[in-house]
Image 1 (cartoon, rainbow, N blue to C red):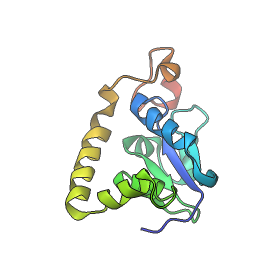
Image 2 (tube, one colour):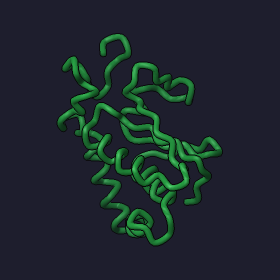
Image 3 (spheres, rainbow, N blue to C red):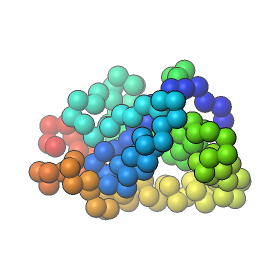
Image 4 (cartoon, rainbow, N blue to C red):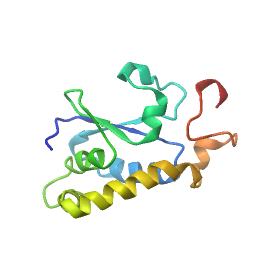
Length: 140
């Protein structure tokens, strides 16, 4: 799976687990290859990318420099390719690329994505206690 940088990462900033993962990537962003887009922001316009907010909220998406989208485990594998050869992320990419491990990772991610709305929310993103997994723009 080859990737063209920069890689746009579409993530849910209201999800505490998601935000923590993204923060780790931000701190190690090699050569600014990664661009971060918080889809929980009111100013995020999903139609600009040809997708609905529900599509973006259902699983993490990335878009490479040529406009190609990937989501889920494949998205993570593309993100990990942004890091230098020999880094823990590149090793993780190789490991998750193995057939049996890839199948387990896909299953685990599918469960996480489906039930992440049950996890604690990012306090800063939910100050009014109304954040939801699939919030419509007008009711957030």
